[in-house]
Length: 94
Image 1 (tube, rainbow, N blue to C red):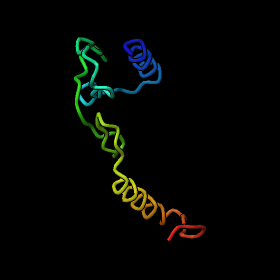
Image 2: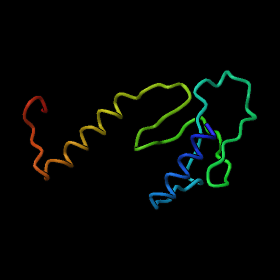
Image 3: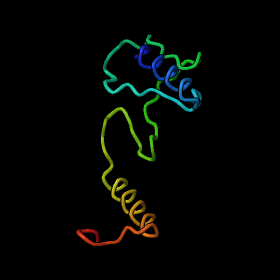
Image 4: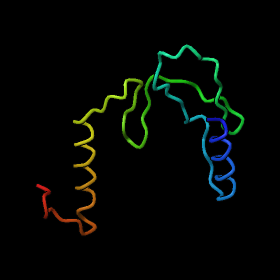
């Protein structure tokens, strides 16, 4: 994982964009694993472990449960926001 983070750092420097390590967090998907000593570092800052976080507007947690109601609401809001750009409600969209 640290190798992947180093690759992300290098890619962001090469393409001139910043990643804010203070807005980053890790979620241990299998929290039964006793090894909590792993430290992930991004831009010299340790990334903390959390039990839940929001990524692209989607709430994620260690249980990997998907809240279908929230996803449907997000899709509906996205569809309505695209209506002004020429997206219309034909072909299956109510």
